[in-house]
Length: 507
Image: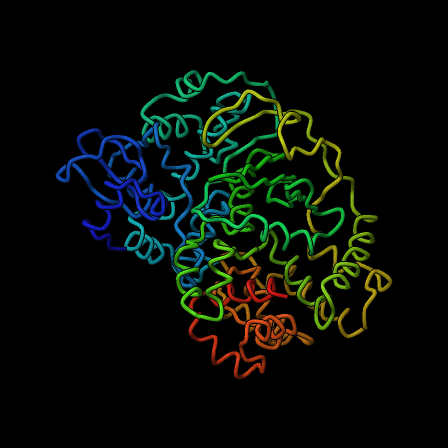
């Protein structure tokens, strides 16, 4: 990925927060790298280099700025938009696939050799998969060092390092100090022992229309899995190493995320999935600029800037929602899913409780305990993640209060996911996934499109046959005939999914 020096330097000189996460500024005279909005004095041109990723800056021998904390910046929006191999790889690395399966596992998922994958990533982001995963592990380690009451060896393995020595060397290289010095500098009173609760500040690019986001999630909330209460979205999480819960509260410039994890190794994937759920890495100015250029949507964009595309933390869950929601109202679909979840919960073991609570902050440490914080949900609330595909496939007929054909469609979906024939993770091939979905009996274009939009995060999906979309289009003075609307919507590319959200919000 080529970076234009003049454009990047102007962004740095103006401390433009919109470019945080798009690129990183390396200062050769100080040996550090920063986010573009770093409040430090603007470095001289001859001392500046620009990098497409933090890993690339670290590979050049630079350490992270401890003032602007570049590892706490929003991610690049292009990794949500791009459907190519590099975009898929970046989403999978963020979800911790390299830590869990290694580079061979990542390459297998993408269908390329390790060597070719390394070559493509290095050409685009200046670093290979191992270096990118290492940068992410360093960020996780810093959070745990500064906030969790774990011993350094526990932090090392929880962050995904293979040895304590590797952990020590990486922290010294990335942050310029030993792990113990990072902990001493933060001045935070720590609580000893085990898994617990961590509070992070998840940055985003403004504007963010938080009300629209919470309204969307509240309307579709499934009891026992999620709820919106007092301006905070709560949900249970099913994570690679255990279970968890999160409370997400939008604030000015960030979203407060209170995470309760049974296994600290799940911190990185939990953060990545929460960011995707709320679409926090989006570039709202680019989206609103395109949609606002249409006179039919201009007033709505001006009145409600920053509408996001709510995605998911579980691709299988979103596919289930799409199938159950075929030709029924949102409330009817929620009722059907609630009954199904009740049957699944009756056969599942009780959720694991979390005994230790530790407070952290990704943008500054606070000494207040979790129960004093707005949006914190006490332990024992019972929220759990959506059932696994294997569990749904094994449910008896009475759990599916729906037509027999739709019940078999759900079982077919669950078997395909359980057997690995269908990949619904963020790093899946969007076109191939849609093709395989459409091959399932009972899955049509609307269902596949809904899954692509919310499970796979495709920003350019139009649902022209959707009744609510057609009603929203008619209310805006747009054609509501599916073919005519699809042709008209070409002017909204590549952000048609965001247009769908706005049309749904119209009615």
